[in-house]
Structures are given as C-alpha cells and as structure tokens.
Amino acid sequence: MDKQQSIYLISFILLLIISIISFINSNYFEIEHIKVVGNNLLKKDYLINSFDIKGENLLRVNSKNLANEILELPEVRGASISRSVPNKLVIEINERRPIGMVGGKAPYQIIDKDGWILATSNNLSLSKFPLFMGVDRSQDGKRVELEDDFKLVVDYLSQLPDWILDEVYQVEVFANSGIELFLRDNIRVKLGLDFSAKSKSDIFIAVYSDIKSKRVDVDYIDLRYENNIIVKLKE
Image (cartoon, rainbow, N blue to C red; front, side, top):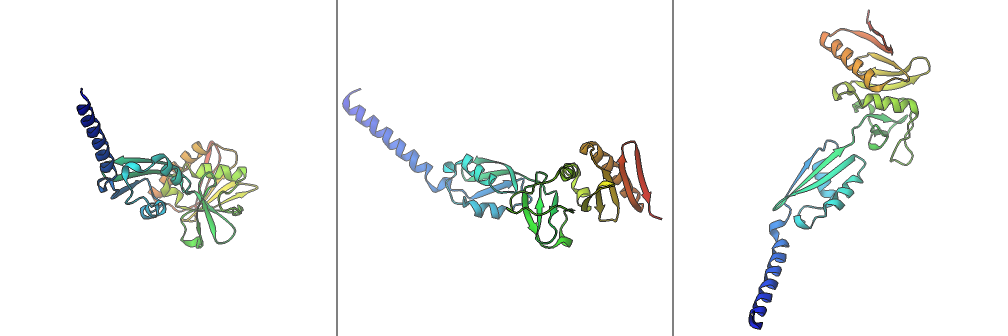
C-alpha cells in the first residue's frame, strides 16, 4: 500500500469513527419511552421526574448508577435497568411491602417487615395497614427499631396474603395472651408468643378462609395451642 492509499484509508477510518460518534449522539437514541415494572407504591411519573431521564441519550445512560440512585428510595428493595434500542428504557423495581403502621398519634409511619419507613399517614381510619399498639415512631424518620415480640409480628404478617392482611386493623401484645390481631369484621385472633410464623400463618389462612366461605359470625379465633384450634362463635 502506497502513501496515498494509506492517507485515504486513514481518512476513511476517521470519517467512519466521526460518523458513528455522531450517530450515537443523535436524536435517534433520545429516550422517548420509559417502562416501569413492579411499582405499586411509587408512581411512574414520580420516578421519571425524580431522576430526569426522559430525553437523555439511551446509550449514554449509566444503568448501574441509575439503579443505585433508585435504590436510595426507601420504598425500593431492588432495581435493574435495561435498554430497548433505539429509544426505550425499562426500569424494573422490587418494592418493599408495607406491613403495618406505628406511632401513638398522627402522623403514623408505615413500615415494611424490616422496619424501613415507606410513607406516613395522618388519617388512621383511611389506612388499610394495621396499627402496632405500643410501638413508637422512629425519630430519624428512616427506620423503626422493633422489639422481639413485634419482630415476630411482622414476620407473621408478612406470611399473610394481601386480602387477609387488609382485614387486620390493629395488633397488640398482651402479657397473658401474647400477640393478638384485631380484624375489621370484629374478630380477635389470639396467636400467643414464641411460635413459627410460617406454620401458624398457614393455619390461620385455612381457618379464616373457611370462616369467610361459610359466612359465620365469629367472636375470636384462638391459635395459641398447637393441636387445639378454638373458633368461638358469637352468641
């Protein structure tokens, strides 16, 4: 290859590189569509506006940094970012599940099973989460430190499906009967203390599902004794 040909080749390569860079930075890769998956607590618009990503170049978005920024939100347990060329960004998040509320008065703090504060509520009657009686609010507004009895409470409640958890409006720990749930249909559930959250939740789900299907009026359900389930009907 002579000198002239070498110059032509180098010029062609430089032109090709410049063209590729120009194409990558063109409006063709400008983010126009953002898909958010797995969000229930967080609104899509809130995520988009918080991180100002719409209109950015898809290929220049740092997926790891963006995921780490999203992970700083208290509602988020996990996050991943993927691209769909030319202009679509997909945000997949794993949210923390609200499990109950704490505080002697408004504003009440809504927490997940690890005590992380996800939101606050000023109106107890409008909330669908059970109030943990005897647990104070967090002072730093980030995480509530739970005593051992209430660690068992949140472990137990986290085993319940949403439709049953929504029925629980209050949880209290008594010296004589241990953990008790108060349901919206005026049923008390006595759980005791020092039990397997998984096995006892399975029993309660089965018993409560049977009660709802038969539409019977129940005063309380006593699950404190492993081999003796008591369902007291209302007189």
